[in-house]
Amino acid sequence: MSAPFRLRDGGVDLFVRLTPKAALDRLEGVETTADGRSHLKARVRAVPENGAANQALERLLAKVLGVPASTVSVVAGGTARLKTVRISGDPAMLAKGIEGLGS
Image 1: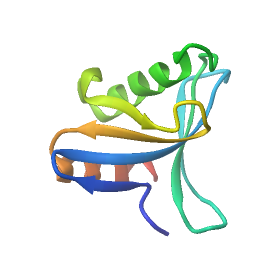
Image 2 (image 1 turned 45 degrees about the vertical axis):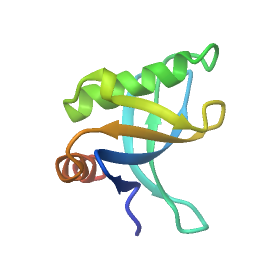
Image 3 (image 1 turned 45 degrees about the horizontal axis):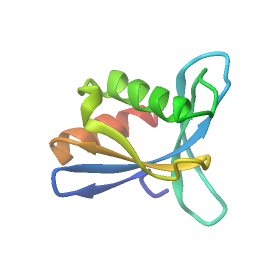
């Protein structure tokens, strides 16, 4: 299984499959698609209008990883379910935190 993230200089890119309009804001582990790519599954209560679901995802990831919300941003897939979220910080520390989310 591949990791749902890619290390970058100054942070990581996290691949997320987002489901809006859920009952709770939560992360549900890692799933691997038929093409072999892995994504962290996330659900948020926010609706997918005016970027509300993306903002809720950014806040959820910041809280779970213990990083400032300002270091988390959706950089690709703004209107799609599959998103790339860039998290700035120490790549090794972030990778360790993300790996803990998949278990």
